[in-house]
Image 1 (cartoon, one colour):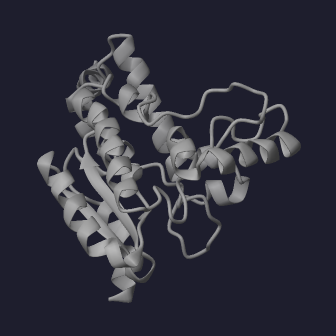
Image 2: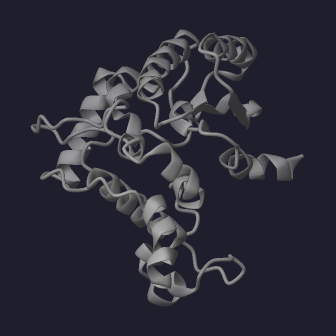
Length: 244
């Protein structure tokens, strides 16, 4: 059972189909005595949108890891991510909880003031100003330095799916290995037991990692589509040209 918990993220990442579990409603935390009711309402929220999802966590601490499955190549589902995020924020606040129990504050920085509170948020900005007055370290995350009116990261910002949807569906299906990389970076390691092409381990250059190569392939396919080039058609024509 405990091993299943540790493997949950990987198992969810291997979900079949275009919709993949996305960790945008990840790591909410409520007082443990409210967790049961919170879960009931959280599930009702996701069910109302007709979504499949994975849900696991640390019951003793009231922490939930929830990953609704969305097709980020679908513009409407990309919009749905923001709608659900706002609904989860309201639900979590209702139960006196936090949007993040352990991690994930940076990419949801637009909600920081509401959960930290005015006084603590102002204090965080002072700390940021003391150590990073020019806002160079992870700009847009947690909070801006005091005295700088810098924008925070938004849940509805441009995402990888915005670019991937420019690739024709048939081409995406043909290059499924590259398209299904979820970008978690687990392949950035030097463990001798981790199966991958050794070039990244030898060069220490992440562009040679599975994630790096998948990203290159996806961007290459997008640029081909932008230029009106069909790689599947080229693949069919190449043997004929060689035979001439």
